[in-house]
Amino acid sequence: MNSPRGSGLYRRSKHHAVPSRPAEAPPAADVGQVRQISSLTNDLVKDMRGLQAKKERAETGLFLAEGLKLVTDAFVAGWSVKTLAYAEKVRSQPMVAKAIAEALARGVDVVEVSEAVLEKISRRDNPQMVVSVIEQCYQPLEAIDADKATVIVALEGIKDPGNLGTIIRTVDSVGASGVILVGETTDPFAIEAVRATMGSIFHVPIARASLDDFLAFARAKRLPMFGTHLAGAVDYRTPDYPEPAVLLMGNEQSGLPPRLVEACTQVIKIPMVGEADSLNLAIATGVTLYEMRRKRLTL
Image (tube, rainbow, N blue to C red; front, side, top):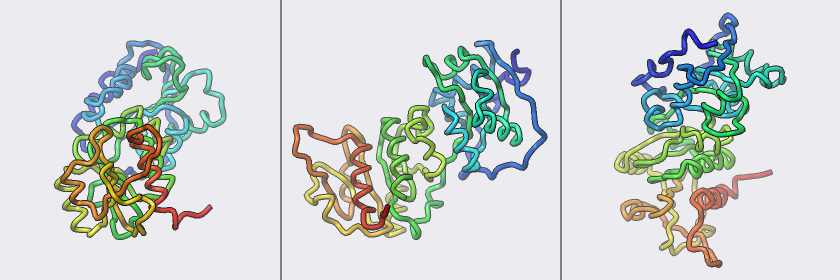
């Protein structure tokens, strides 16, 4: 049946303030009811599908997450989940049933939908059987504790959401302290980026800053900055990297702009001996991050 509460559900949320940190988990509420939706023209379905668009995500402060793992991680991390939708055929699976119960206890809107509805929402065949709508969370720049940081990854002008999601996952894996998006960048809450994080989106602080604000922050905190550049003369394995420090990575196509190159404490380079003239940004970031933290990582 169609939702009596679905019409304009997310559109009513537009222009609300995005929280600077995840909200604490709300106290358990009276267990609600699961609603059923089969209509492809249901307003809730339209609103969820709309979150594929960057403009809609920006206006609502919400994003779409595919898969049971992501909504489970969001609950554990205390993020605000607005809607949980799942396919009827997975209802009895123990982990799905647990997520449904958790969502209902938290007052989340829970809907059982057809696979056709899930395909409509995700815009692809063979979609994940669980999809959720979650409130975005950016940290203010000043909330990143530079004094207690290990490595902060600053990404200037990154454009590919898959690269960004992979970097966020690597930042989490290596124990780095956060990501700063410098200038105009892709959206970390795009569905491709969220998917690539494999849940690390809920554990890595993410801040946004203009180029001027980022440089002012780094100078005020006296953070040494290491930037990778094809023109670098220092092998990335050579420096004795201090902590805290900043790893500064540039745009996939153009690399670091001159102003950021000049701001670096040291400009480093990853040696390459094959015919490739560059590395994928996410790979280059991962290789350098693990080298920066190598002496501090143990099995």
